[in-house]
Image (cartoon, rainbow, N blue to C red; front, side, top):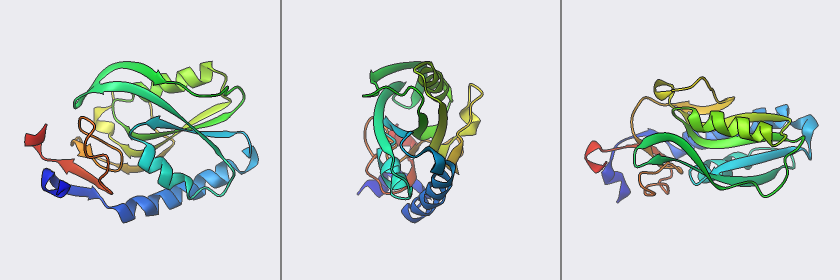
Length: 179
């Protein structure tokens, strides 16, 4: 039923799982020496399906936490971020892996990285399912990226339009007339 609202499927569920396997192996290698000091922070709500898949492919004991940050209204990033839910613990001296659904304008990621360093993080790396570099407004890049996408309105696998379509098991492009 949801497929009728899409122009096309951009990234299949199989491709997402394969890429999570690859990124998980890279993160396992990178943080092998940091066992007990790594915190994966998912940015709610969009990162949940991606983070759930990604952490299955990390062969280390890790901790997870979540932040809820708002910077969108409808289809537009409004540029100002609002912290709705902050971390539940201190992160002083910890290696943080920030898990995002998409890096779009870059404003949210840049501000979150600064905030996490200000809270005492030892390091902050960004893992994003999608990267949309054509929309970047500030200099920032994800350290690990699943897929680069063009400037189309994407939904699925956590990404939404007005809180809908997050439950699609793949990434698709929403039909123009729906937004």
